[in-house]
Image 1 (cartoon, rainbow, N blue to C red):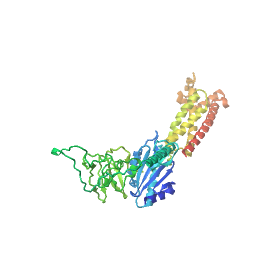
Image 2: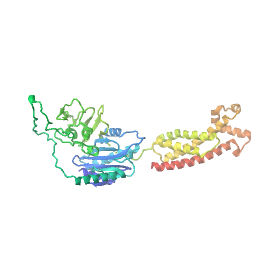
Image 3: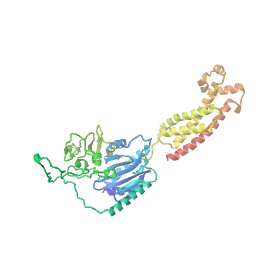
Length: 477
């Protein structure tokens, strides 16, 4: 049974069972609910998340890619709304395999949430403050904030009080019975058969939609109820609706080639396939269903004309893989920003801690941005790059000061150092020659002053790099 699958998932996902067919839980910080539908042999997955400005991959793209894989054929439909993202997960006869598939789906979709900067949200107001699971006024367990929990409780109390004070009126069931001969009441007619007045006796209410093929459908559905109404095994061929979306929203296909039949729509006959399954023809760019591993995978056709919310599905991932090579490249590129700040401050005649902070922050940020994760290797690489860039920046400052010193150009040319680049690449030899000719030693020499500034710069930059790096390590963990 489908409820047995929930019992298998309870210890593995730390689920909270609200009833034998309803459970909620959190996986790597993202909340979700699982509702077992035994009569349809499926489980409805629901989550409530909000994307950020950094989100680059939409949920529709995620589900499309996920469902294109044969091993994910147990995902029958999905709804990618805001903030609700839900999916219909088919449970086969093997409870252990079904539990494994559903756990893998939850893991994959949480990975998608984490990698695309999604955050938990309230199912009613999309707030991310004070979230928890509670029963909404419609009877479903949802992720709600404290304010919405109180409003739902107030609404339930008001509804209960109204129900107690309002007398129950008997209602007539106007739902027509199909596949049975129905007497057609005749109107009063005058000459030439023209009606003399009054509405036909067999008019139906506007909100009642007749089903096709003898399968009655509810008049309106939305949200979780819409997903629960999908029968993954028999819905397409038993109702005449071509996609999970049109079934859930009760929107009939719009193919002009299908003539209406008693207010409904006709459905092309299934086409047999070699393996004994069937292929359902798309309606206005819908889906073609092909048997895969005992279930069905829905594959999009050339044009997909719906609003992009329903298709068929996949789950959470928590550990972001590190890319050290790209991280090193990003650290080198962004460290040039720190070099620019360092050189600007150095040209003013100062060695400031602001230059060290700028150097450390830009380097670590570049590694994290390109490497996707900042770890111990990233900290070591950042320290090495910062040390090299501090040396490079001090060399640029010293070579710049020498090359732009008034009246020194001719002397440098005689010594073989032409222009800035000539001074930069021969800086250490030039400083030794100047110290030798001037008879300067220790900190008074050009070499000594360079080393002194370099040591101070190293101390400032290393302290800044370690402080920022340790903070980033804690954040990524």
